Length: 410
Image (cartoon, rainbow, N blue to C red):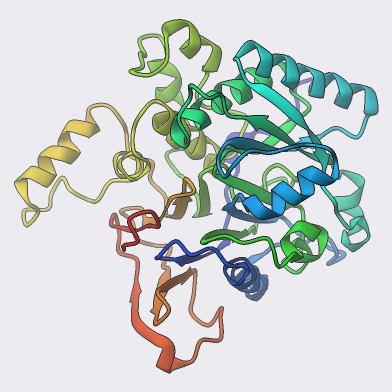
């Protein structure tokens, strides 16, 4: 049924944060500090008139192998080694029959794609911490486990298979939202106040839940309909600001689909994935769709970010000509996604942050003596002794701050 509500007019004004151990060392402290950051960003998080329901809060972290191995064993699921399995995080309808149909559909699609489905886990939550509005529309939250085939490499190759399954599932199960489906990362989010994220998901309270990186987001919807699925992070990004060129960006992505080809997917498989962009989503979700599509088709995540969110290169006479040629080349294939916007992004191995070329969503970061990077929309989100800080700086318009936890460098 057609309503007066039009999703293309949605914009947000939010708080973002990231904590990363540059050496790739996984600890619960990373998760705990990230949750502390988002709890300090309450003034950047919207809430309803009752003050009991938030616009949305969430966290993206690495899959904690030891934690999930133990949790899976409790329900009779045997997981392999780290990254030998993927985890899907689902918001299902509360209706038992519809949920059972959706679950069966996912299991069937896994079999179709040659993936072994291992089982379901109902995510333990504390419903009593929710406000009435959030509780009334709360989804049934489940995780699934999918085994990596022996002939598929760990990392992006396996995630690509999971991506195909998810896209096929999304074409058939409109009442279900997939927060994430990956062998590297997982997203916990919902319609929370900032302090409810930690208390709602008991997984995040476990000392065995470790990660070397975490992205957090508190949502302030300026003219948006809050919902569980519209909370951030998305599958690759957390976003502060808005994409004011979104209608043109989305239209151009749709227009490309007639002639699109892929170096990694067959023409038949590409048709199963398309459309790359869900135009009913928010501006942030559509940018996330685009970056994910580029990455799954073989492009490194930092490169995908650079071509979607370029520097102000055209009239910069001081820029290296080779760099200008780079931007000029990619500008023939991708229009800039202009904000103002600050973007955090991660694929589970690298973590990055950038401002669009307007530079109107400032973010600052510290690097500490124990080789951790702490970034947020503003300073003061974590109490760090001055003696522990080795560097302070800020994001620059069109420039990327990037941490590679595998290469252990900034």
